[in-house]
Image (cartoon, rainbow, N blue to C red; front, top):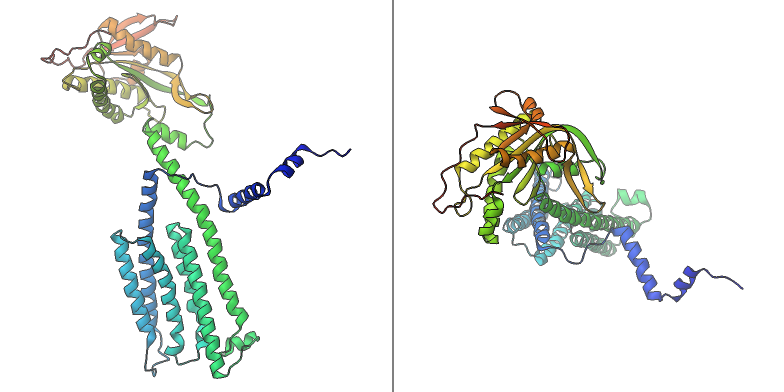
Length: 479
């Protein structure tokens, strides 16, 4: 008995159409790259449309420079056809100049519809072919004369210009129009040769030194145009998919970066390898915890939308102070913030900047009210030491944060403000690293909850006094 592998049986039972579809999908993916999702967000479409408009303006300017170059060359070149009665080249150049200016005007007005753009691509090639065709009239030569014109090379420039839009259909349109145009010119030349009694040649030297036509050479030109068009179109499909995917990912990254600080986002983007759970580094740094005094009582009296509006005002005002002194907000948790210095970005004066931030926050909250005239006071706990900064979580969901014993001390110091009636407490090392210029007052040694070793704690007493309570009596209750 012959044994047939199970996968061979599965292939035999699979319908031919399905197998062909899978094979075509694999080939398409190999040639054109990963397929895009069927539906793109409107903002991605708008971003892509804006880039296409800019690309069309760029194409217009390049084509304007090209026609200006043509006109300049024609003007300064020696006129070997001075005796010719009709001069078609200036007319063709003038028509192309006018056409280019009109399309550039439409591009700047963002009123260039796709049908007009497609028609203009074909007309570009048509005008170029008319220009080449006019050479034999300009120089009073048989029609095959123009088949040797080096102006044909500008066909490839015009095709490649269409690639700036990242839309393959316009490249294909330009290439097909160019190939069709050259085929028409070839047929016209052959017809002209027949009427003159000339014959087609197979001699390359005779082809180059006379007005004879080597059909194979002209077919090679047409095939070259089509091959270049095909390769460029395939490259554009791949590039367009990469571009759209980059726009989607860039938009998502921009949106997600609003949920973390720019410094952390830059750290993640600039990493040589994808960040994994547990990746981190130990740095001498300073951390500060902040918390709104009496927030529980305030939140009970406010509607959810009023509470969110008040918090947004508060965080916006406080964040300005934090950014001013180089702090990076690691995370928000309710009304609390964890702020780091010398973690996400270098800061040699990190302890002093943390203290300046705490004082600045006190100045802000005592000068203004938030929401519906509500006074908010902020308690701060500051500590300096060897801190671990890195990613925690799972492979699919990570959080960039700081952790370690020194971070826990800063959190406990923030809470101790309630017991001492203070708003800024700092550990001894933070005070020592901050240096002179601050009015620290030693409170004593405190055994922080969860830690056996006592911690020497300092307070800053010269913080701004709270403003007079508002008439509505919205003072914060104890938390």
